[in-house]
View 1 (tube, rainbow, N blue to C red):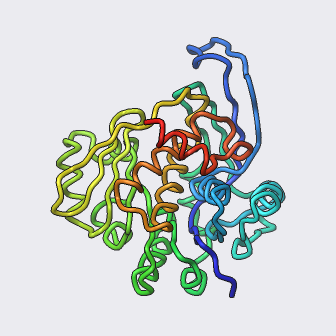
View 2: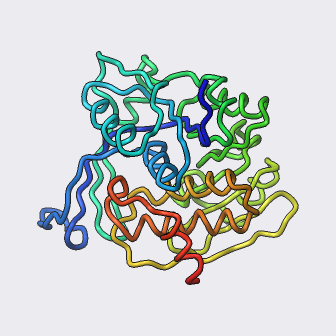
View 3: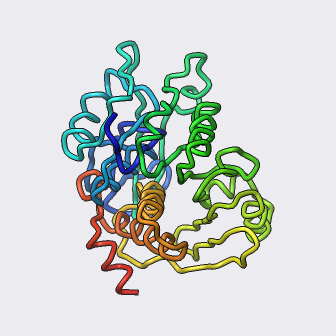
Length: 301
């Protein structure tokens, strides 16, 4: 079986995206659309594009694709970026997973049918394959596929494969064994609305030997490990075209940092610069970040 730099297990979908010319309108008002595209998306889809653009060989598994998604993903992910999607099941009875995002500068609104997808009696995602994990240098895991996501984390632990995950609660298996858990401000607001971020951070670091990172958009990033003081850095400043894919790109930057065996501070800086680079361009799938654009941001700070 072919070896890959990175194995990703998670959500890959098709996103219809609209970039507005100005800010979001009030109710019953009008705004002009500046650009629109139908392109790969999802936490793992976007992550795979960034990692491929940075020179990594990438293999992807996760949710099923279908009548409305397979051809476009094959064209872009496989055809343009040489992402290996051979494990992904093409379900002829299923349209595939899609969403729509409307973007205006620093903000965006997403629309989808994910609640019905994950609550449906038919589970349309693959079980991770042990050999795929064994044949990767580093792994990226989304937490969305319930016991299958936890199985992937357990396999990584058994094989001593380092993995990066996102938005996992501190009591989960995925968090316990991770090398890096990137937790977004959106997840923190939903999960811990009335708790102090420093206290929540300590709960996270006490529950793993891995690196914990809390992101807050343009506000300071928190990071650290068990029995260490909290460290903070300011995100890189860019002229924002779109924030779509920023979190997915931060995860990709963290995966790349682990792949390159960077120290913690460099992982956080590289991930932050990757996300900032993505925010400065639109759309991600047609204008992915490069090592040069990321290095320029880091060196400019």
